[in-house]
Image 1 (cartoon, helix red, strand yellow):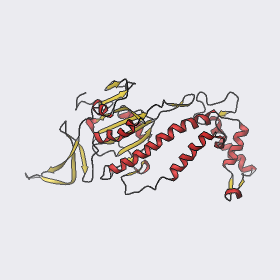
Image 2 (image 1 turned 90 degrees about the vertical axis):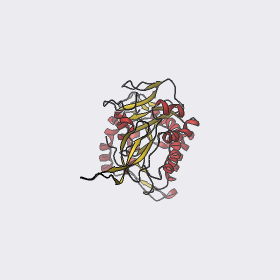
Image 3 (image 1 turned 180 degrees about the vertical axis):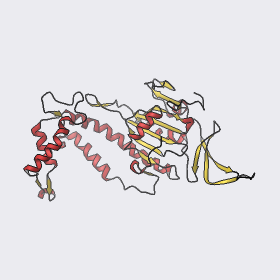
Image 4 (image 1 turned 90 degrees about the horizontal axis):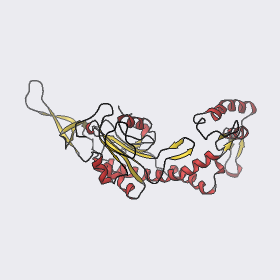
Length: 337
């Protein structure tokens, strides 16, 4: 596909994918994951952008004057303007975006899966999957796909979004779905602090990769446990119990009979018919049972460290600095279409 050619249905200009061909049939389809150096060329992203001053002429005048606070994002290879941005906008070059993945690919943590350009390069994405990890089939048809997504807009309309995502991105529609489903994606603004933020984000993602590898085993163990109505009742009442005191002096008081009955009437339907209970392998053969663990305290010893490490990593996470260009997606403006 040549620069400048773009179909409005999928908005893909150039791309590659590994293994499975995208629905639109465009781009390079590879038998194996490429290296970072190969990927940037196969994705058609081996080009740069630069910022150019903007000029205008006043009505009746002939002398160009500069437009204050605005610059044009210029695609250097095609000679086209991708959009206009403010003075504080710092572009992320495609080579630097792929370079973010380089250490994780080199150490065997990630394999590049898809990458490409939309709308003549106005938006780009890179997606990788966890190396050596098949989609985690937890129970029956409940499958968790381990992808890491990076996407942003060269034209300034989309801040850089980065993190785990389950939607395999191959076009504008799937990118939009990934961003809509991306509650766990970090949001990094195109400012002077972007490089430092990306370094910190890589450490976060590397830790998430480790946790995912360990967590899949824990999820399968929990899914293997069955829970009948009696066990569910005991568990639910403990969830709503009040605990007074700490340590050895802690006392647990369950809800009263009337309150407990009302609570069970509200939560039992979720246990019996909640989302996912109709998936193959979830419900046990006996009526009133589901493949669900009544208490996480029954984790085998090798898996206890998983929950402890997750808790520790959350506790050790520093508070979000609102002056930093990296922050949670909840405070990031919604991605425009």
